[in-house]
Length: 303
Image 1 (cartoon, rainbow, N blue to C red):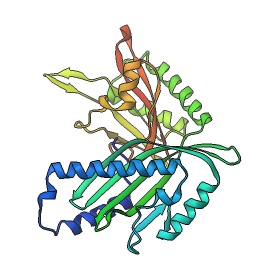
Image 2: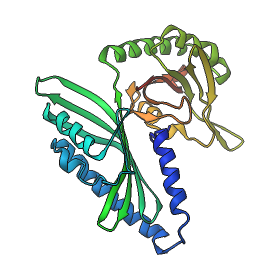
Image 3: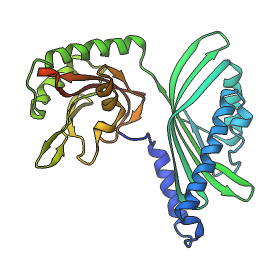
Image 4: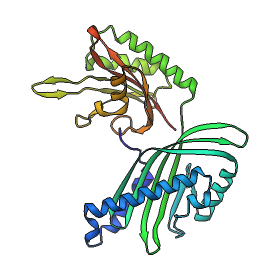
């Protein structure tokens, strides 16, 4: 359950790293210089986002490299340098307003002259016909330092649809019913397979589910158990979240435990469980004497 990363972007990043790894190490490789590069790229991406909110396509993409080897992709389509400008000028001309906000982002600096910005963004816009849309963007920007400054040699944007209000209401009702049924049971991790796979069968909209048990102490060690079940085609698979992964610090677990109330998470890439971009609805589950049993979840895949 970490930041979103698209496969094509990862492959391109590995190629960039491989090419730059042939260079001799220099003073730019130390942590101080990497931090300075990361700060620069973060500042540039803030500038880019602000231009996008102003519906200014020329300024939004002014850092794109005009080199023919550069790769630009949006919504599964490949664009040349000129075509991308044209597409977004046309798109922005049909909007009345747009608000893009960064939910989460990270900057990787694999080489002194290369930086990778990966971000997950919420996008809300209103068309000139007063239609309102909400969605999510998963973006990767690979920057390279050239003689005339930092330029973008790869841009990849995936547009993900948010669940509809009706879909969210269905999940809220279904998980609430399941939580009520489980609250009166004495549960162990090994009990969850029939209970949660039956839940997935009943609600095809739900991609995956878990009961992440509250940690308990054993021989001086904190034990965490969260058997995760998800659909794969017509089958259901199970994985146990890695012991090294502290799910209690994750938003989908920590917030409902703190507030003692159901909670919809921000979107995230789940590489510890189902391996997709998802949004999670969580309900804290309490047993006898109001003791926390764990957090019960439903995941909806964003496509």
